[in-house]
Image 1: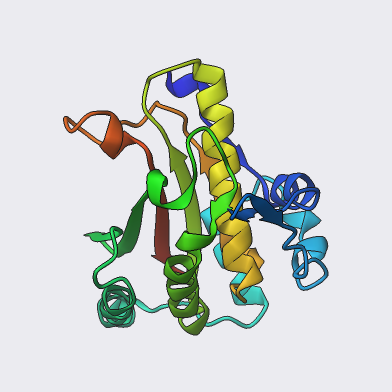
Image 2 (image 1 turned 30 degrees about the vertical axis):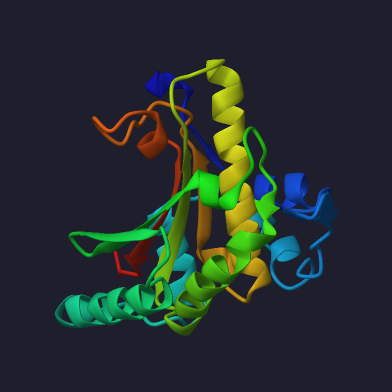
Length: 212
């Protein structure tokens, strides 16, 4: 199962999503390509880079790394800001070491078997984007997951496209695309014993930029 995991590069994000709209609602898609030329088309040199490579590039570009002593207060503040933005929403926020993870049920974001964002999900995503844009000293990994029902390859492709749609929307709201990475995991990382509903999710992992 884990052998089918595959990261999606920034170039793939740009190439595949520049061709299609990523928002649905009322039976019509919206072509949201206005951000092209605001960072995405200049990122082809980032293909295949991991978090450490993104950290290094962002530091070289003038973004301050988060020092060891300031990591906890810096991430605590974002935790509080995200909880305020997402109060009353179905998204959850968890802390794992110095990382924050926002988990969103895919049913809130997408129709069944679709990878086009629902209009009803945009306020929630916009709130997350506002916090990410304000706190620029982090990298952001968007992970797509689903359950084990259906064809495994289709599930993998679907989770990739859904994660891409979320990342693209964050970038359209002003989040620096150089901070972003996308991975679709299909059904290879189940959430736990809760079953299919909990497995179908998008995770946004937020990590402080560190000097290596």
